[in-house]
Image (cartoon, rainbow, N blue to C red):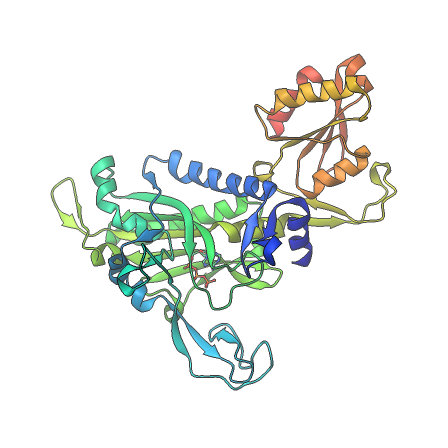
Length: 427
Ligand code: ATP
């Protein structure tokens, strides 16, 4: 984890939040490369599960909602974790998360467990009294449920159909930590998929398969994932069946994503119904694939991170291991990096810039003319750029470039007029 956190800081994936003011515990900011990787995840998810499907629509609801929403949804009453405090060092822990000794001081002397509500409170307007208190949403889902009728009225969707949303959620976690794994502000990609009660198992299975495929496409191997059928006592208050997709993080196997059968719990409590084509009224049941953007981002980095002790290759006199992010191409922040061989040859710089302008309309590209080419390769490997293209004197004389592959480190000479189709085939 230290290596990944350090790479994230060094290369601009993730910075500690409010750093110049000494930080703010467990807040993180996504840097120039991090935001690209995160956007790649969100955009592909949106394309796959909203744009490419006739049975899905999207939504972008407010973070703050009328408190009656959370009375109805049960969150004010039920959305809590068991909290215990160590009587010796006063550290607060999640009772379901620790063994029988305090992780900080080793004491076994704890207070009784209380239910600690995770909803994050703030105040609207000029007075901070109970009348102005509101809660940040703890999941994006409620924004979807309360708009169920609006969406039906405007889109005329028929069951089965789903509503998807990407956005921030807030939880006053008792023990945030492990970098971006557990924070109090995080982002979710959620779908509420509405079905007839008798069909719930069929669609649950279908979404389980789609989530598994999604995880695979993130470059995560089957053996890094375990699907856990969550026992009733550990499920959220609204769920009758939950599968957690657990990932083997460096700090242990933990929940990456969750899939829940929320029954008709939410729509019923919000008093929302559906009328079938033949006029039958009923409350649809809900299958909910819920994906944490930040946890997905972290799992992607953990799976992609490799170190290779391979100092002999590429003429480098370098004993440092080669760090390479073996990201799937679609996730890489830059698809292509363009290098003029030498910094002080204007003809090479001009040619490289010309190529950069041409390719950047299709692919996100980086331009690097700093240091020797071997070092530039290393810099691109570390951020997962699949292809590096070097402009050298042959480019000027023979119209060819050298294309170097991140994973094989093979270099190929490619004709300039064949470069686009070469890249298109591979990217
Ligand atoms: P955990 O048991 O780890 O607290 P949860 O079961 O409460 O998680 P859900 O309510 O199922 O989580 O939330 C759906 C998804 O949102 C999770 O699978 C995870 O990807 C993400 N998520 C939940 N809480 C956090 C958090 N504090 N920080 C980052 N991501 C989170």
